[in-house]
Length: 498
Image (cartoon, rainbow, N blue to C red; front, top):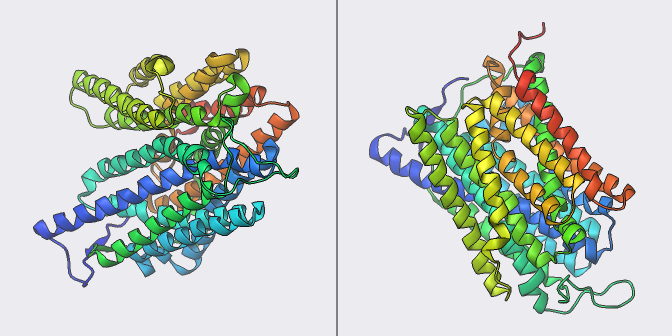
């Protein structure tokens, strides 16, 4: 990949201390975006049970939330890819800064659209706004990821990306807690109750009436935040990057078998992770009769596990001079991250009048120990760690289907810890040795976020046929079987097919 040139907004090079300050400001602003789209993406897991009750949807119909949102990623990425191949990279023409601004404006419009959707109680309009939101996030993803990588020295690019992704995971961790509290508790007390077909108020599992304001006010707030960030980026003198890399016509990257197999791996990974998170609140009610307000606290540990694992993965798969020092750093990081998640859950639960006891999450410590052992067995190798973690997840899912109650619930929660490193490991293995086709290969991998649209829909349909979510978990088992194969043999580099 060609080395980009760096220019300031005025067109002159940014050097010395001014460059460092410019980069620091830019990095903070962009990392805020990572946090925000992580937060809103997982807020879909709160939106699903809300819409399921409001529109009296079955399991299959409720999963159209994820189908629409992640389908937008696929369609947006495909459009962007073909424009790049035929006419050149749009981001290079408009600039990363303008790409971020347009992505934020589109996302703000989508969030504002939730207000009329809830006011007229129209499921199709909710889905339309989710699709537009997905398009906005696609543009943000395309602009923000390479932008972070370019904000500083090339040798520290991975460090910056890992830090930004960690904040993305922090957003996915607290979204169920804050979002669930706002939708099912705080705003449930405000406004006129929504009525079902029989004219009776629709209630949360705790007996509170559900109101349109439950989604209108949070998403209006997000619209305002996105517009504020757009103005901030517009007014902040951020560096501009222009790449001299020429995009070849044709789809040469598809001649590499390890990339093609990696595309499938991204598809099933994103699909399985999103599907499990999407059905979790409804499954918690099914298997242990947890109300939404409590289930969303447990969901935070599913997504929080991904945050912990990414921090540990950054340490384990990084450049470590001493293994002893590495394991100590991993242990301290895991403990601090776990306490952070529990602290957030606990203080939020006090506000809702039902303190979340520490004894509720002691099983999570067992999974932390297993994850720690998995990193040791993986020996800082991306493929081997992917294989080990995939096999652990398959074991957890088998236990889920073979048991009931809190054992089944906790084996699902524990999966989040082992999902953590999969995206980065698959992505790195898939683009290895692509040379001039690296950018094209990266675009193809981003398209495979489509799995987040398809797999939840499939599992939702299977759950309807089986009259419950419990035995539908064989769908993600199939996904993780493939991931184990990719970590074992599928990622191995082979010569390009002529």
